[in-house]
Image (cartoon, rainbow, N blue to C red; front, side, top):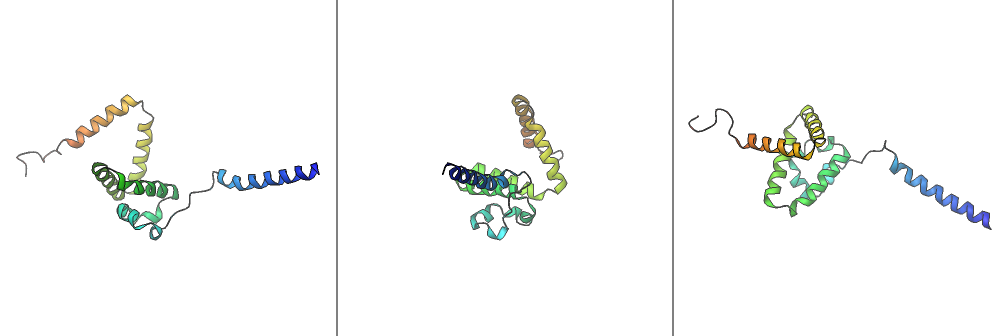
Length: 138
């Protein structure tokens, strides 16, 4: 009787481990979601990415879908910033996107004070008019 219980326990443990093993396998990828399967509200928010959507990796699609679901609760300024960033990202070439990811990863490794300093300089440059576009220029 005791041996039978042990066998049942071991069998149950083996079953649990076999079910958990694929989830722990780093070779597995997050499944992609076809554009047509997105809810209408998500498609509206993510519209700038429509032509590239099916080429995006599943993990990136998941992150974007999560952001799209939060969109209605964002303040207007946050929604505007989100839309601007989505449009900018959609307009980039794959090489530009790769460079942007690498730059972002490099910036994340900097100490917070240096990140703040660089962000402030970037915001100042962004707010300044482009050369040749100031007052008195055609």
